[in-house]
Image 1 (cartoon, rainbow, N blue to C red):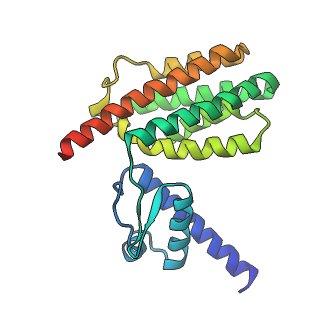
Image 2: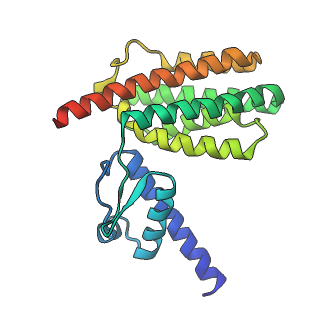
Length: 235
């Protein structure tokens, strides 16, 4: 196989990975649903080889699982796993945030401010249109949280934080539907982000970490409402 052919195979596998990951995170595929290669081939227009590689990579991300003799299926979800993920994510990002506050320079501060501004504009646009899932908004949201910890100086921490972000997104995105608004009580998410940014830029590590943890806890409370409603509806 030529180097160009290998590059093409890797590119197709990356594309398959992103497409299937997005569909899992957005709830197109339900927890426990079989992921048949033939059906995926029809959906994405890709051959079995990159699809199989993508499913294997997603298994490493805990988004798919291999059922004995039955191929891959979407990984299950649970309330315990959700809170475990939020707890570990809070732990990892709190350490990364402390390191960023201690070592971040003026360029890092500028990234934080710029990412918050971009997020604010995306929220304004989203609220004006009143759509459902907004990929541009979610990209800005991820960029803001990444900017906060981007100066931590540890590629390993950033990698782990990225993995945890993806896994918690699977739980969070269903809560973006209108039917769950206000379910966890009155909440101004942009103010939570603004308060988190202010504490970070003031270099108050203890307050910043406290606000980060509270932000994720409140998200967890909302997710729990959604999971319990889904379980009750299934009974």
